[in-house]
Length: 227
Image: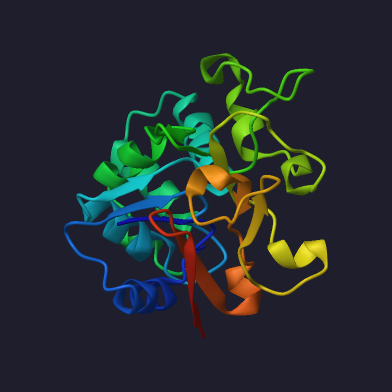
């Protein structure tokens, strides 16, 4: 089974409860569409857990990207004391930054900006479309375009490619509803295959709503837990 999730934001306990609910195991795959860190109290604890899972795939969100830019700005000063650098990086996460180590820093820096399969594409915020609403070649898209724009949440932004796009970044409640995953189905389909969707909006504003959810691509079911 393949599950997709986004914007966990340090909610370690909710994440563990959700994994228990779906009975996540070694034969499954989890794809996290960014923003594992910040807001919640367990950014690094959660990140290290995901990095320790051989069947978890993580991509860059805007909050990871901001941390990496913070790190790069420190490194521009060419420090000679790397212990001091790590100490400064730990302060970035006031609640559990003491858990941060160089291995985690390196893996955060190396996060990809998208993950693609034959059936779907995972990004954090958006993907650029050409005038015909087809994907612009992914390698031609600037990194910031994957993690910052909020226009992809608009229902009229519909990619015509065959692949479904999973994204987060903006809570679905901003659309006027509650904290639940929103799928945009293609016309004339039932929605029981992931290719039946144009895009699937995953961010539930978990830090504020207390609701965390994931989407299973095999049967297009959503699963939720509440704080």
